[in-house]
Length: 358
Image (cartoon, rainbow, N blue to C red; front, side, top):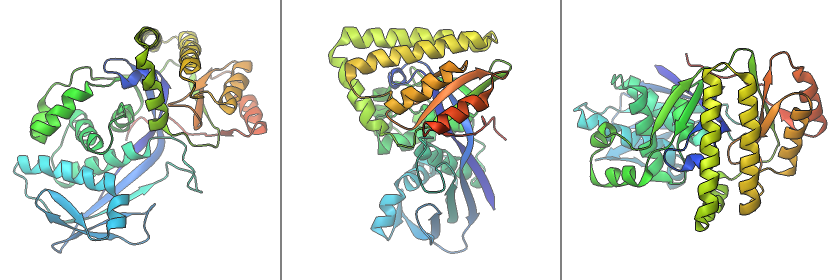
């Protein structure tokens, strides 16, 4: 039996701009995981068991390049798992590796016990866990970059609005500086060439760079209790492209801010990090005023204002509109004061740790 895990994520800075190729963001991996377990099957069929979706394993068989699940409802729910298997096995076949049947189990603790979503990027972690476990199962020893690219190809077959930063940090873990690739280029490659060729190509705009946090810096996370719809928010913000001057200025300001933020990381400068977190909050709020999508909801504003009052630098995380906010503090700040006031305002502290890999 082989078991792997893929962590969830939170964005720290660079949201929305990161959907454009070459514009950087900073993310963290958290110690909440999607876990994938695999073992060989002795029959000419296999099973997929998603513990969060079904009580019982679902049987699958192969029809050329496709994974076929007899239950259409289950097939729809297991879309991400099935697509990741199909993409991976297309690659395995191109390496002349014979395909095997297996029993695959997927489990997750990314959401809370009641199934409420925290916005930690569960679909990305599902894709990464499946690719990672198949990589070990077939003994391919793929690099992190290839694991990332296989998960991205799967993702692009399912949806197109994601920057795939959540996939990158789920593969690489820790702190990550990330900018997305030219989606049109990669999409065209996927449609016209083999998976193997797409992996070997250089993807324009893609930047993946592990970072080391300044000493004595800590990230606090607060959850507002209401899930956000990232694709809806992102598509609303994309409408700002109709005003190229405003949208271009937003991208430039975000880019400059995140570059300074990355520099603050590299020079062990907590105050510099905090300054750029506050600046990024202001940049996103200005853009939100124009887009009118309510990225920083009243509750997220309250989360940020409370943290600022107690010496933290705070902003929304990810698409906003709900989900989480983050706060950067020096470890000598009394974080309990922040937590207590959050709780008084119906904001749940999530005491997750940054996950730096096995």
